[in-house]
Amino acid sequence: MAATTHTVTNQVPPLVGQDVFATDRVLSEAVERHIEPGILPVALEELGELGRAAGSAQAQKWGVQANAHPPVLRTHDRYGHRVDEVEFHPSWHRLLGHAVSAGLTDAWGRPAGHVRRAAGFLVWTQAEAGHGCPLSMTHAAVPALRTDPELAAVWEPLLTSHTYVQGLRNPREKAGVLFGMGMTEKQGGTDVRSNTTRAEPLSGEGGYLLTGHKWFCSAPMSDGFLVLAQAPGGLSCFLVPRVLPDGSRNVFLIQRLKDKLGNRSNASAEVEFDGTWARLVGEEGRGVRTIIEMVAATRLDCVVGSAGLMRQAVAQAVHHSAYRDAFGGPLIDKPLMRNVLADLALESEAATVLGMRLAAAYDADTDQERAFLRLALPAAKFWVTKRCTAVVGEALECLGGNGYVEESGMPRLLREAPLNSIWEGSGNVQALDVLRALSREPRALDAFLREVGKARGADHRLDAAIKGLLTELADLAGIEARARRLVERFALVLQGSLLVRWAPPEVADAFCASRLGGDGGAVFGTLPHSLDLASVVARARLSAG
Image (tube, rainbow, N blue to C red; front, side):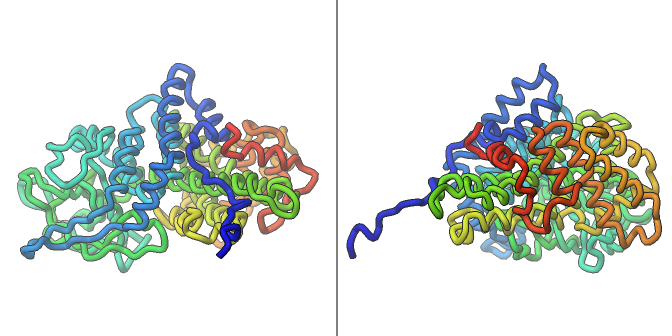
């Protein structure tokens, strides 16, 4: 065969060796916006280090290896003793260790901790998304444990540690730990109040023995878990350690690992409790109230994680189009491809700006911001996570057949994309949660309207959308059946208001025209041709930093 048949031309160079943080204009601007000047230099330095690591060839290799070699369950040792351990590829531990050392489980006690952590989570998700689950669970366990100061004093320093210690042993002998969570059961799913796992109190010990089955247990290799079970006083929250204070293993029977669509590097399990020792967290009968702040914190990670997946997918699509020639020139210069890329970039920017605004609300921790989060967080979780799958699928198509091949990395992003919409409550759960906030917490709507009102008068399409939202709220007939429509409008109005305030005019104009003004289609690439689409695409280009 002639050697000339193997000449490689018009192939796109790999997107590697980039600072994923510094070259993301939208994220960098958000960090500078939400972090006060005295803390900003340190935050930028740490995020720059993480961004360079995330864009390195080494981190990309770790991500490939962690997914090519998914976790393996070992229920017994060679002698027949139960061990119930999950083994991971070394690259999984390298990814997780790097994330922990970068502070991705540490937000609650340091200045601007939530913005710094959210930005880091968005950056590091782009290296590999699967190991984000234990990071999220560990971070989110802190507010639940704070309902019991004695427990928090023991566990919080370990949960927020920047030291990753692999393997199970007495937590008092470790410099850092990971946490998981078990709420859902076979018969109930999201309806956790139908849980049948029993918790029987031990007289004089302060502990309980659990008996039951958890259909989904997140991060089963962790050192401890927050779980829900039925105590004499009703559904309650419990801490289940894997290793007991005397060094013996707690009863934690991993029945099998789930064979999932995506998220392959991460382990999700079914777990049996059979006389499993646990410690009550909070009060008996108030388990949902105790664990709800953990759920809320993980929902924010769903938003931020989806924004990270979108950002990486759009960056790959723009990069490919900049280097790939077709029909006489680079794809990025073709009007139709530019329209598609700009539309994708709008969705990515809106997701990032919204996610970082929510993180800043956590840092502010005022009554006003907590009320704002009560409505904005489930609305954002509903909308951003659903848009993620559509964005990644369209971005994959921008690469053509190359995007459908595993080596591009795009199939892994696409398999991962639906997860955050399901995790911690799927779409209907979020929509109903918004309705619950509207009916029970009127301050939430007031806080939301105050937030979007900061942009009122700047764009007539935004003003009309806010007015339309208020009209929807004035009519409560059939509101549950209209819940998705309503929550979508909440999310779009909020995104539009943030972009009008903070994004370049060409971005805000395109978003308001297509998402709020009705001048856009049902698929990506249907923006009005008169907009400044070239500037929108240039802003999204990863190499433009």
